[in-house]
Length: 400
Image (tube, rainbow, N blue to C red):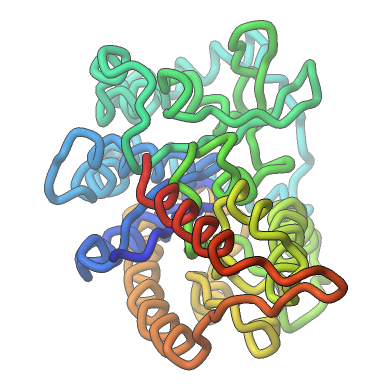
């Protein structure tokens, strides 16, 4: 039987080209032969990558990464001299502001003058390069998704966003609603660049605020449905957890602050899963509760902080940028769509994904997950009832 996994893709602007390289490498390595991808979730740029892979899998396309790579290597990178100049100018201006060398002028995305200037600056650009909505529509047939309707077919797509009016986190889930281009735009809506995306009675900003990515939703039947609880969570991480030196320059301080902000919710969600896993290992759950949660055994998950993988049997590695690349790029790499920046991110993602597969294999083989010990202070579960609970959980695991 194939191991059920959930793919969780963190956001980070243009740096999520790293995610594209990682996903391509995973599929090229043939993960579908040994693993069942029950869900895929993401936020911001991670949501873009997740949605492109999800659509290709739902449509039965091969290779499933082709749309994803075309988005990053063709549509979303500057082609003409005008597009290259615009990209270079935007990145370098942001870099000068970040270093405190030129003053910063905050312009609202609703400002009509700002809108006019952007339209003039991009008048000669391809529509798919200047308009993010058009870029998404060029690679995902949202009319086809509308015709499908809500789908319970694996993998389940989960897209995270933050409600501006309600203050609530929102998950757009392919199992319960039709995925629309607005859902992806909402997850990618950086407040100082794009107007809030209005959907229903709320408006949405980038899910990076508190759901990057929506990991906890990937292990809850309420979101992904019965039978789709993963045995492992494979995390593709953009923002580094730690760094070797104290940032001292203005742009470096801003970069580190944003990295930590992007990781806060992720660490909290992984911490919550870790607590549940630890209770599971100690035998703290009844068979009835485990059957309801659809957790036959602890879920293998990424380490919350460095060193956790050595302490807990259920912890596996995750995919993260190499330290060498982290040292070469700055915050503006999230804005830079140049071929040089995108290609090095894709290549690093490819290499790190292959390293992950090897490390994960060694960890899983050396740390098998057995049944939890009997709960203290309770009557042993009768063999017949225990067999029934296990059989029911296995049957649920084959559903969906």
